[in-house]
Length: 222
Image (tube, rainbow, N blue to C red; front, side):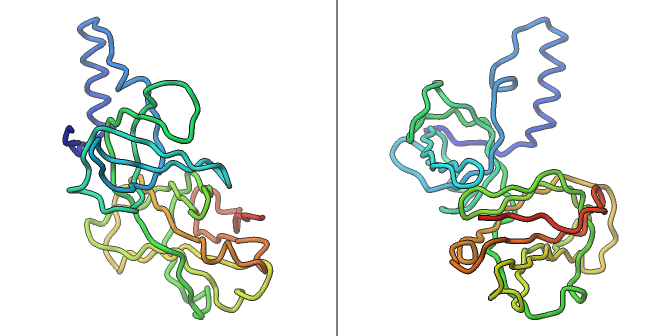
């Protein structure tokens, strides 16, 4: 079982691509044929790390077996951004994969608040994508770098929990630190406790988004 090295994937990929072009060499498929997905790390077995992939909305789960060891960097049942490819092209509930890299992301569960949304710290983000996979709401955005810890969570307005549309807000607090350049950020929030409520028909997500400031919210409906 090989130990997976944690590396700055995008930078390394770029450097290797340039090097390969200069030398007129074939580029390894690890740098050309791969997927990026947010998946759940299930733990290790005698073959390596096991992950679970969920497609958008309510797609069936795919159990993915690898030969790497990520146990030193990731805890079981944490969500990670995985760079990988399937060993073969045959769809199945259990598949072998080649893993090229993994990155930790924000992991949390939906929280509840009774504080007025107008009082919540909601520092701006630049939205790239927002999607649901099963019980998880996943976010790809950019945030401004501070070099310090920040608060980043998804909270439900407790005053709307009994309504068919529950309002949720991305709470983002840089804690007064000076912000600099924008950098990519991935997060995955477990919203299953809310999503399974029979009275809930819509989960409405509010973001302070610099990219699309005219869009006030995004709806996820059953």
